[in-house]
Image 1 (cartoon, chains in turn orange, brown):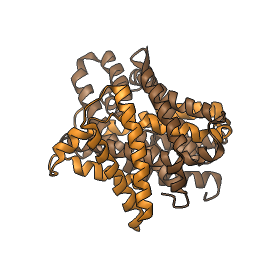
Image 2 (cartoon, chains in turn brown, purple):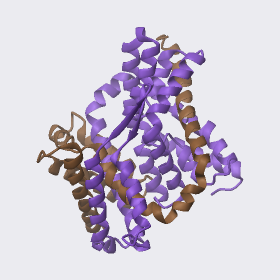
Image 3 (cartoon, one colour):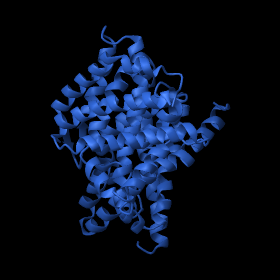
Image 4 (tube, one colour):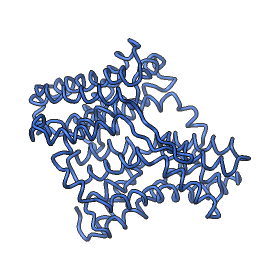
Length: 149
Length: 263
């Protein structure tokens, strides 16, 4: 229980910082952004609690994404309000504080990052090509079977 | 999430949160800068400046070793909020998703192509566990969430996926626009197959990839845009679970076989 309270406080700190960025960067001054953020926090918290107490090897993000989808499908009671409020929070406003914390954390292992060096660029390019070409190949098969091409 | 972390001391480290708040204020004020190149654009987002400001601060007295350690759980928790947001973006589009049809779901497996091509090369180049984080997927937000949740941010896998995420965020659109054009004209595959392939789970990359295809095949514009959009939504919705249950285990397996050990 103590842990859940501490998670909640940390989530609220993160949410507060995000709300400020949301205003400055995306000019969203709507008061709906506040309940919107609280809903996102509640979803994240619920997912973290589920990971903690459900004895299956599924990471919290797996639960969190699923809860987020379920509460926002049109058939879910109150989903209209949930979607309306949470739409006041920009996705990119959430990533900025994450990467600010990440930068501070990365500093400690900066040499490990730089060790990857030029190899990282080669591999990143291959990740793009592999994903793109793999998708195109399977798409070709499916579209032919379906008779679309 | 890690129970060892002294959450209370993190909450009390108000200077850390104040530093991040200031960083967010400055970077969001500067805003997004995009440099157009061909059909895509090099995107410089506030999150990128925030990363480098945070990194720079580590080398000042403002950020101690302890403060740096304290910031890690905030990343994990922040990613939780991010994934919640992605969830509520997907939910309202569920009808469009179902309309796409189950056959296209199979196409998502094509995204695993990165593991077959990039992972072996990464290992040959001498990368260690970083290679798994970097190549198990195209490294968008849900994949970052998965890796950070499973291995922690301060891990080789975490470094790998963050490298891919940053690279993709900055250069992804330009790069996808480029290879879409080259491959669509240089291979015998149908343009509509590449339209589906453009939907990798990132709006800007999808727009660049399909934009190139439309420029090359204007007569198919409507179909290209529709298929790319549907596939992108599908990738966003299923990418996390494809990575969780297939991509990451497969990457781990290949890594274990190629390096001859289990971890």
